[in-house]
Image: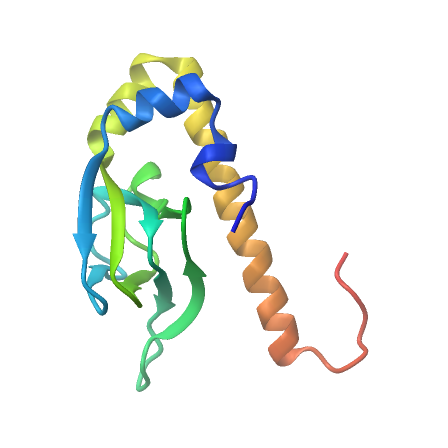
Amino acid sequence: MTSATTLTTALEPEHRERLMCLAREVSFEAGTHLFEEGRRADRFWIVRTGTVALDLRVPGRRPAVIESLGHGELVGWSWHFPPYVWHLGAQTTSPVRAWEFDAEAVRDMCAADPEFGLAIAVWIGRVVAQRLHASRVRLLDLYAPYGSGGLV
């Protein structure tokens, strides 16, 4: 997927290079839980290969998958906003190779360099906005009466 929120398009090269200085290569087998709703958000990932499903707990049922993420996409944004707690869960749906980032180190770098911090904040904001919009479209598909109008 290529969008304004993937790493290569969201950040200018100099900001991307600074962020990548903090990256650590990791691999996960299919079915690995990266994080669970309500737990401490202390890291995040950029998918290199494979897919990760974001899910929401539903009482009495299996978690509902609300988004699948792939190459170049950010997994996790809750690390950027206090109280640094995950709002969703994430599980790999295939083997995944990713870059992992320590959230505190990235927040420290953002605080030390306001221009870099702004670039990261705008990127995270775009990710949140895109995912909110995608969730809205899915909800309308599921629950809106047929022919009730388009998206505004």
